[in-house]
Image (cartoon, rainbow, N blue to C red; front, side, top):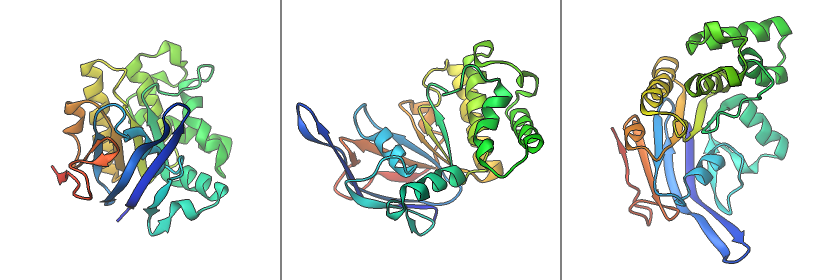
Length: 233
């Protein structure tokens, strides 16, 4: 078992509506090496759940347990260490630093490691080659297509050899052909490197990539009440 989510709930204090439930009593388990897709309508709690799995949003109740470690019993520094060591993030808007080259963007998380500059450059170069961008290492984000920018973002997410990649709508800004390429790349990383991928998506086609599929509605696992519609492909 890689992750266990136990009775996870999250409430936000909305300035007009008072307390709003983003997640309600969510429970499930993710095994190492799964490709997990999280689907549901807007406002269902998908992104909130993903951020909580990544140690970025504290629950109002319940717990996220990673390799038998309750995440939210860790200190602020402990959570930062968890993210730095175990999590790679891929977002819809790519999140690249515009004034850095593709190589420098991938090197960014490596600067926090005990690694000399040559080793950082070599690691980043190898990662860009692995995502098909060997000839784009010195290009800036504005010089890359949307699909290439997302490949750089995936290479950066891989920099620290994470246990899992958390992807929030990674194909949301891509046309269908590019979306298919990015999904195939994530699937390859999942199957060949054994990296667990957890992906939020609105796309039925993207959801089909999941070996474990989780569907949320109004903050609950469908059909709710601790009878989750979770199934293996």
